[in-house]
Image (cartoon, rainbow, N blue to C red; front, side, top):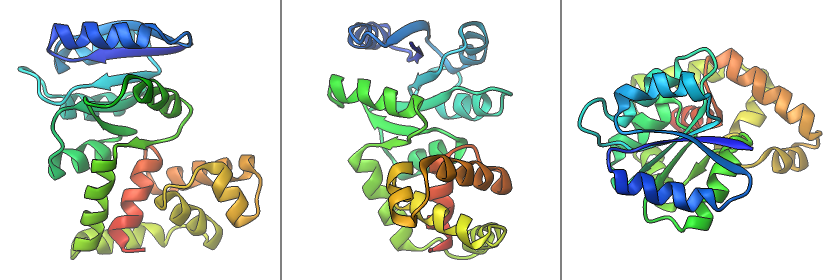
Length: 215
């Protein structure tokens, strides 16, 4: 079972999400929170695999809560689920360690599939967010950000860099394996080493670093 924690200040939204996800046999709603300030406690209490996180809440917002949650010793994966998709929100959420950023108009079946993918270690982004990242890249991460990203990537071996670039292209482990002629376990091992060397939390942050470096 994939354990899910729902965080949203709207009780109706929480009820709707619980109803949608409750119909999936492999998902279990283990708790709810109405404000970002409750997230750490709820996560420690219920140990969810995935947290569905709203952004705008009256107390602690979802992005701040995500940053705090991802700093914990054994953090769950976080999917930001919101009606807003401003560029700054998207980038801050992904840099904070969120494994996904989806809009609340997503189809119920697609949301269930997104949770399954994120629980399995695959990041998921809405098409709108993907377009924004492309724009972010085309605008060029000029200056210090580009230099910092290039310096970090220089820590990687040639093979690790190839894997990082493939991750930046949104390829799955299986796709990377076929492209680079290596087994899926070997790809996973490379990704793990890349995260450790670069001090990153997940594949999304690797992709952002690749984008920033202009690679």
